[in-house]
Image 1 (cartoon, rainbow, N blue to C red):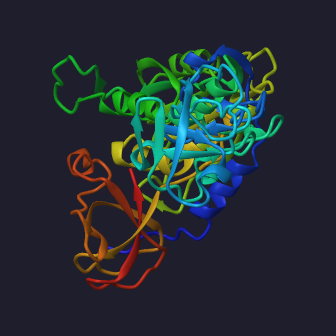
Image 2 (cartoon, helix red, strand yellow; image 1 turned 180 degrees about the horizontal axis):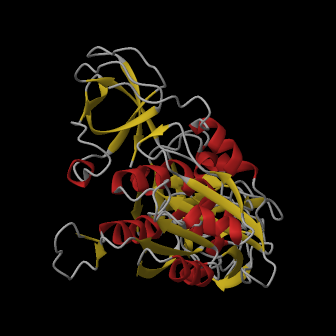
Length: 416
């Protein structure tokens, strides 16, 4: 059966442009560095001093004067030692060698290090068996980073390596953009909570739990408002409560049915519906709305006094696809980051028929062979097929009206 005309619907690329053009103003808070993992920096961080802050040894061995070992094997006078975190007791004199540990400061007078494997000590005599350019084993002051150099730029996400850099330069508290406060609202008379037994045509509210988990994975602090029945005033009250958060996600009630109140209510509440339907499969009845807070009808928020609402189709695969492909973009920007998707270019494991007029996101399995990634399309049973989605690790993207594809063709897969 052919699809109805979709030419007037927004393409995925147009929807991405709409979401990307919405102004955002992420909040800024100061937190202890130990609490900043996963957050984006709201400030540049600079080196508080030179790194290394002194000429230091890169090896366990002996600090020497390069001139004393330039001619080859040598016998030098032992002159004590310098450990990491300590200072040499005195400068090194000609004809001497001072034991030195990795990371220890080079004593005055020395300009090289001979690794311990190239030496032998007999009492107070240090025999240098071989010294190939001993200056190479010294890290010069400021060789890594000079004082005042920016080491982490604003917008950097603080993960393990970045936290280590911040700790190194003494940034024990940092200005960051806090986690986005998202809230999930599920609508529909047909829904029951996950601990209840469905009756008749009812189903458990898998969407709510899925969206909470997905938004947490995207770095949000998430609240779940639960289920609201298909009564207009109850949905209105739930939306007003949800608008107290940074971003509201509403599942269900987006289409054109008699009980699909959400788009109508958003208009009545003076929000601007920037997207109402998409040329995407699955996920056509997707809504994105924004609005200025007025104090009446909507409530206060910290993001430049704006409301942000995503209306997701009630079918779970549709809601998942729209969140990972579109909604995450606003989440990343509100968190202070830049949206980045994880695309894999892979070879198709099996043929595919021609695609229809909507951009299609088909669940797929990814595998890595010696020749590179391979994508195996999974059977498409429709936008309610959570069971297939749960076995996928990617979404194979089919362009609008794309012709049939053969096994071995190169395709794009969005990792999920």
